[in-house]
Length: 153
Image (cartoon, rainbow, N blue to C red; front, side, top):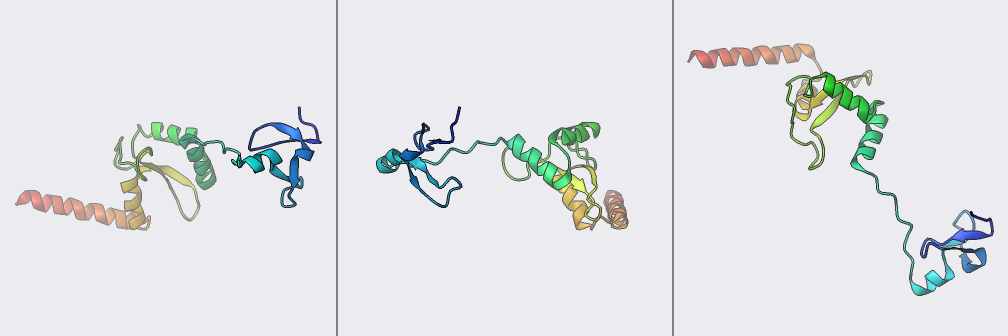
């Protein structure tokens, strides 16, 4: 139990009377975060931060950017058969180095509505086509015609 006249030193992790701390007006309680003993001995370690997992960071980013959770992401991916909604690739290359899945959330930039889960390549491709279905259709026709011409020779 904490009492108002006591404070936890972040150097030695011991709760001590406030008389064991120097004044420091920058802090909310007006006292240094390290006790006098820790300051004298050089034991001035900062309070360790809680380590966040990849999943916690990913979940926060998905919520902040798209308003969905990791569970929603995984559900959408499963409903698509476990692969990209366009090419069907089930194991795309990682996006930003090791440890990341290669899938991204595709969304409309005008309405911010989430459309599907895509691999990075398909997401970039529709972005380069400015999300224009007419351009995508022309690109598909172009490739179809080129493949037909190539097979005839």
